[in-house]
Length: 95
Image (cartoon, rainbow, N blue to C red; front, side, top):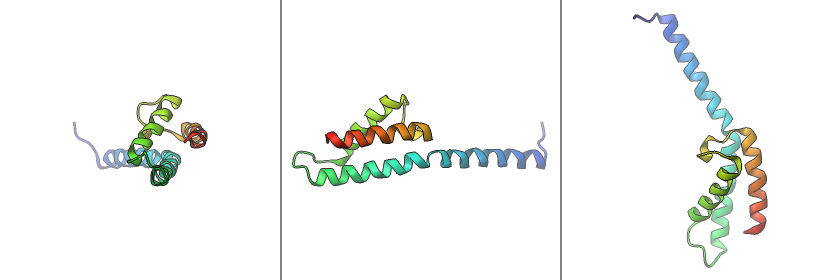
């Protein structure tokens, strides 16, 4: 089966639009992730017991994953990111 140039262009445009939509959709999570990273780095510097910010970040990510019911925090959409942000703000009060 041969594909025409117009069909190829349409396929490329559709794939590009899907990729761009994914990037835009994940902006809320990316912003929250940066805040979580900064919080973990700062918290580890002020805590004698904690040695690595990665452990704290993993713990926070695990709580978020279970709370928003997703396998991977990278797949969180905007609505879930709002819920994740609320959870993160409450977690900060305990740590």
